[in-house]
Length: 394
Ligand SMILES: Cc1cc2nc3c(=O)[nH]c(=O)nc-3n(C[C@H](O)[C@H](O)[C@H](O)COP(=O)(O)OP(=O)(O)OC[C@H]3O[C@@H](n4cnc5c(N)ncnc54)[C@H](O)[C@@H]3O)c2cc1C
Image (cartoon, rainbow, N blue to C red; front, side, top):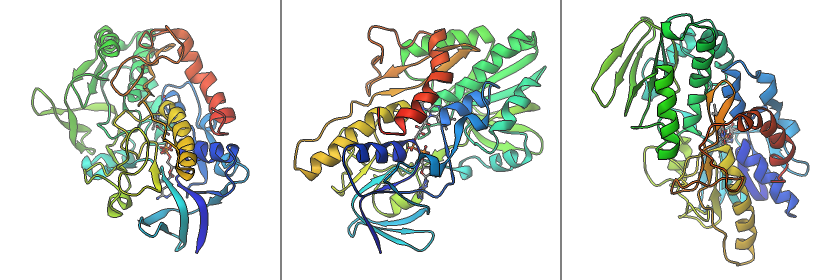
């Protein structure tokens, strides 16, 4: 049996930045279990889908991002025994730890949308959320000169779902500049009544949808994909509908947490299967040595990479505080939903758990689309991510 003081499941944004931060704070025995050979900075996927970045800009070998001094267990967790604090891996290993942090992200729920997986395999559907298909998105969108195109925003739980609007709105702007927008029927399938649920942000977005002539299907979802006829069966507030002759669909799958979390009794028993934690202290409500952050944790706020900057800080302090019997810090639910409303303008949409504005730059309206946040999101933040966030310096 292999043992560590702190064992982190998942080598994404959450797992790597937390490991780095704990080591910086003086922890000596930190291990990360992560199967994948490549680490991705996911926010850039949407820029690949708009022809503004390449996959090489967002991918690094995992070995390059695992912090010095951290043990990388290249394997996938298959089962957890919370009472014994042991984990079992696909490779047949048994891992034991004193403190366990779960941050394995979400997995695609292909069964939620019959026909969608076949449509991806066929190449008729692609999206920025499914990295294997992302390089196809911009070539497909930029070659559209007319006909019907459909975009979706995935329902919760999903990874920073409103950012799925980025490829839509950047494509509309590019079609307008090419003079073909009037010939393109653009439809958006939204899971809720509005895009973000934040009135200030939705006001700008509704104006933008109207300006580009986007037809919005509200409280809607794709119930079936007829990949061979290129049609989508959709339900919405206004009833069922079949969208036919779709030239291209940027249809994002639905998501859920990995099943072994619920199997271990660590979720609240809901279909999403997220880790049931106190959303402020980030500690499991069922086992005091187990914690969770990131997309797989039920934190009563929209998951995002920006939110992780705060979550990692609170969790690193709380793991130390719990070891010394001190009072725990509280996460206020800060999150961010950056949305590009045109080729070069972006609204940051920084809010707290209650949806109130929570700007990183004081006194600046975080809902107003501007040029500098676009440049920062595309060029500045990736550098901050590789150089500071993944090194536990933020
Ligand atoms: C297309 C897209 C665009 C986005 N845009 C933005 C944005 O503009 N701004 C923003 O703030 N956020 C954005 N996000 C959200 C942000 O990327 C995520 O919130 C963040 O990556 C979550 O990090 P995580 O570590 O929780 O999960 P992930 O990044 O998904 O990492 C989880 C890791 O756990 C590993 N894992 C899974 N199962 C197991 C297992 N059984 N055992 C061991 N390891 C396992 C996975 O391989 C993965 O590496 C975007 C996300 C996507 C998909």
